[in-house]
Image (cartoon, rainbow, N blue to C red; front, top):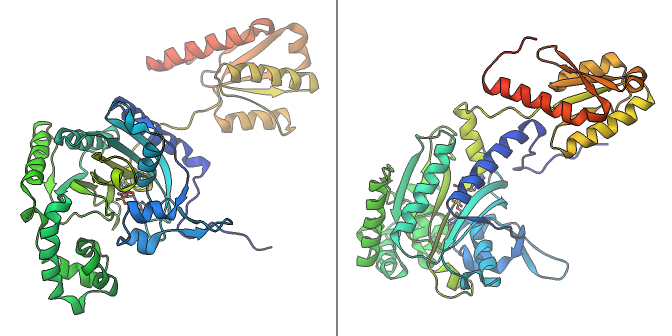
Amino acid sequence: MTQVKAPRGTQDMLPADAHKWETIETTLLNLAKCYGYSELRTPVFESTELFERGVGDATDVVQKEMYTFEDKGGRSITLRPEGTAGAVRAAVEHSLLNDALPLKLCYLTSCYRYEKPQAGRLREFHQFGVECFGTGEPIADAQLIVFARRLFDCFSLHDIRLEINSIGCPQCRKTYHAALREYFNAHKAALCRTCNERLEKNPMRILDCKSPECQKIAAGAPSILDYLCEDCAAHFERVKTYLDSSDIPYTVNPRIVRGLDYYTKTVFEFVCDDIGAQGTVLGGGRYDGLVEELGGKPLPALGFAMGLERLLLLLEAKGFCFAPPAKPAVYFCTLGEKARALALSLCDELQLDGYGAELDLMGRSLKAQMKYANKLGALFTVVIGDDDIAGGILNVKNMQSGEVTQAPLDAFSETFENLVLQQTILEDFGVEDNG
Ligand code: HAM
């Protein structure tokens, strides 16, 4: 039989890397909690209309990259290409926006985009995202950016670049779109077919086109910053002032337009040069019109998402030291049937108390069991034979020091827990215990 392989652009998360993902996810969620964000989980698939209306039907994501299919009931369904639209839908659908604002939500999700796979670009990838609803104040933009910066700081990634821009509101974008149309119309023949369509629908999307020819033309296009209305310009100034007073370094890059249509005013990206062409690890901004667009009341909002595969690539490129995976506290080696039954219940007791405990499940010889306990790196081993059971005492061996402690069977867990505590104290104080 031929082997079935994973689909192109997907990655298995293997057990050897599980501790890395766990560290990443716990660190992100813990900091999000400190900033007042609560976790939201939404379905992996939504009605296609949600993304067409939310993300925008002139975007690459909607035009080219969505995994869309008809379900058995004839509905058009799409695997989520990003997390914001689903978060807005859920907040509106469950009236979460009627409570005291701001509403702060965060999520860890898988996303799906039919893109050409390369390092850092997958068809199934994972995002950590946050969304803050209900405030139009520039201080909210600043705090969101500070928060994003602190996420990188948690992993000692201090030199990742922050680039910010303002893409204005629909009002100032009207004049900007007119200027863009005038500029791109003069280069119409050289633009790709999709950009020719974009010229009418949403000329700002041309700035985001991946075709090298379009990119060359876009480099000479007018800058949005020259077209901001008074309100948007003042908003951007205040965001920058807050960032300055928080000592957050940034550069203003007027070419950042983001690949999704819902953004207004502030947009930002955290970019690095260490992981190849796909260097944007985090992107986000304000989206003041989206809640209303998706059927809610008019309510400003903002957020960002970080690509977890890109974060991991960057951490590995920087040689980040992940804490090693936890080792079992104890391994029970057994001789005979009675010993097995006893080990089964002792393991159960310790596991319920939160200790990693293992016993032989393979019917191995005593020698092979000891070898396996060593391979697992168990901190303690206990060999149980008929004599030990008859005598009511078990010998617990500290695998690091070689020291053996006698533990009465009727108070085994208490004795064992004390031993682990002593060992932890020795390790915490950096004392080498050599017996
Ligand atoms: P986005 O820029 O499309 O924004 O994606 C955010 C991050 O997801 C990117 O910076 C990147 O790290 C990662 N990412 C995107 N596509 C891929 C891919 N094909 N493979 C691997 N990683 C990828 C959004 O999704 C917005 N929803 C962010 C947001 C939240 N804006 C406001 N709130």
